[in-house]
Image 1: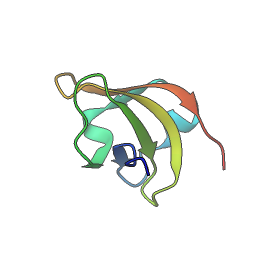
Image 2 (image 1 turned 135 degrees about the vertical axis):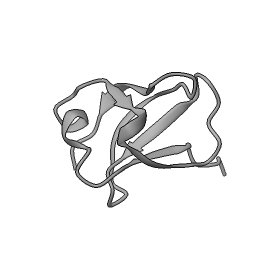
Image 3 (image 1 turned 90 degrees about the vertical axis):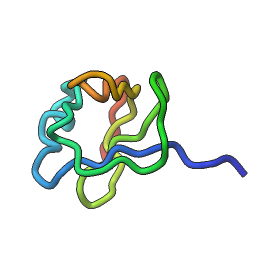
Image 4 (image 1 turned 180 degrees about the horizontal axis):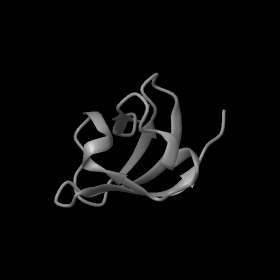
Length: 74
């Protein structure tokens, strides 16, 4: 069994730009990080309810913490 991908959970109301396919996840939009992603790790991006809305790459050393490359619509 593979371990789950780290997740970046957005604060309530901050999912709009990601749903509109803006690729950047700013540090101020993040409520919490689940798991222990390292620089360059693939992460799931979830809305406040926990629904995965995108996938991206993680960079904890930037104000742009996530850079999305794929979006999900559920």
